[in-house]
Image (tube, rainbow, N blue to C red; front, side):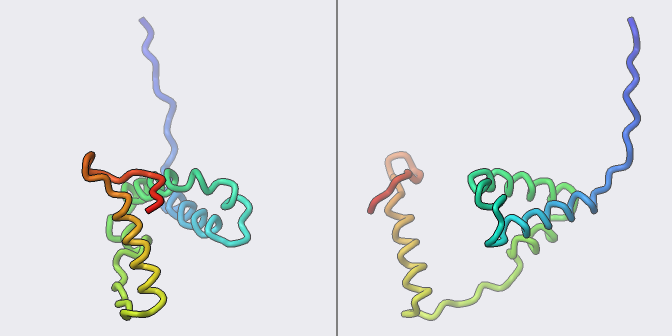
Length: 110
């Protein structure tokens, strides 16, 4: 029986990892980003795993700040165009609700 020794592990540069994740998000959000356009279908998974990694590297408060969850919600004035759009989106989402299964279905044409 031989004993295997693990290779020495170098230092972990968490600040560099966090900076890379933040700057990659800014780059992909750019309206002129080719990479952002062709990889958009991968972004939901990438956002989840990136935020999970940041939550492990940093505290949850910093992640909440990054996502904008700590900013106050601005009130939308009733009757404005923004309110009409928001109401239409909420109505569409609720049309997709399937009470039989207790969840939301896709391809709702409401």
